[in-house]
Amino acid sequence: MTWHLNGEPLPLDTGSGWPVIDGYQYPPSDPARLEAAGAVWIAPEPPALTAEDICRQIDAERDRRTALDFAYDFGVTVAVDDLGAEIAAGERLLQMRPEDQRNWQALQGAALTALVSGAPETILPMRAEDNWNIQTTAAQVLGVLAAMTAHASALLFYGGALKSQVRASADPSSVDWMTGWPGDV
Image 1 (tube, helix red, strand yellow):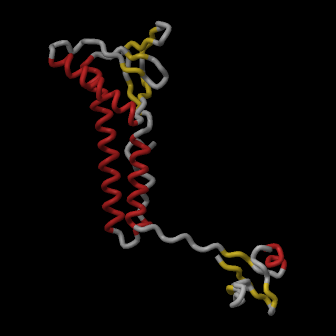
Image 2 (image 1 turned 30 degrees about the vertical axis):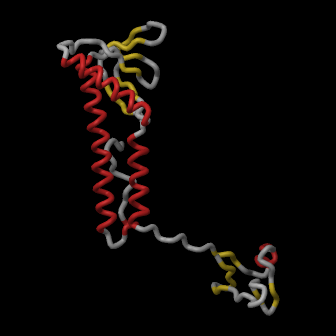
Image 3 (image 1 turned 90 degrees about the vertical axis):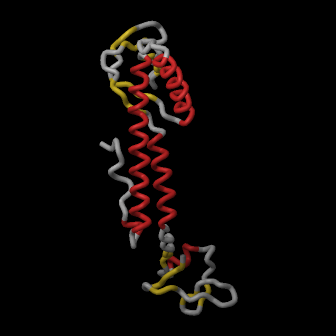
């Protein structure tokens, strides 16, 4: 954050605060003149992140990953598009934004109700990210939602373990918290 000449910070005039080279005060608003005189602008080192700063970044990364679409292979379960075409669903992406997660919770309630009522084969379609309606049974819905929950739990526990490593480290910035997350390819 200072001007340097020959590797040393330039002295500043006590009155103006302007850099001085060979007795001449250079206005900092004219960087071209300072550079022409051989001065170089050195930006300050960013402050080191604290363990808590890094833990907040880990939480944000966990939340970002939790909100990513969840891939699930429905196999040969029928999927129907909005025009009535049918295909084997195969692998589909399910949206996981917070509002989507609330919808999955509501669907879970309907699936549990069907299961408790003795109707596990009740069709409760799950709408995929690409707008195909997978014709899942109540029992299948619970299986898919269990897989979603297991994935979210793995992210939560991995993030927690990373935060513990950061807090225990003598050098918190040395902990690589961007790799190794569950689901990374």
